[in-house]
Image 1 (tube, helix red, strand yellow):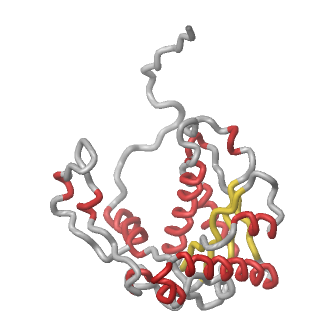
Image 2: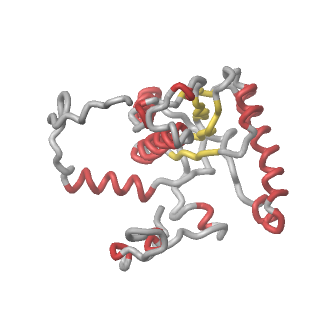
Image 3: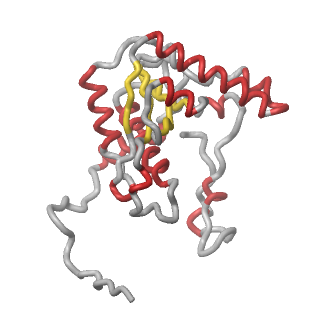
Length: 244
């Protein structure tokens, strides 16, 4: 029988930061970025300054990850020829998705689903090979590599909004075809094509909500107390919101 040492009741290890709230203006800015972030599809060309792009990538790289595995790599796609190939992959999957949607096919085909050819920057976020070696936090939930990479995308998204830039997450592609196109090693997996850059304006509400594709659910419907389906007292006044 293997014995395990009891957890030590030591104080927090290493240097720490004071557990103080942000001041009102800083706090408001964080919530503003969250509520005004949009999945953008309409871009106005232009460019992203190198210093700004580096700030955004640093924000992404400071995302949390399960077991501190940091399962993100970014491929910056700059050539028009490569963008056109990625655009073609997205268009191919768009047609397959439309067919799979059945009666909503026509409605879907009227939606703009990508900005690969229009955005100032295109980044492909890919998860590297060797992720199976990370067992910490993934033994029963191996998909936590995807969840962790999504945290990096959200950090990038929020930082982009704070910089006045739009970003769109495109997931309509065959991952094996995109991996081959970008010369990714065996075992890697592309998760997102990220379109980034100046936009003419941010949508007042999520584009798919504006286009009547779906509506944001009421927060109260998402909150339970103690067990599944038991309405949460904290959600009684949560209502719904068209901001997001």
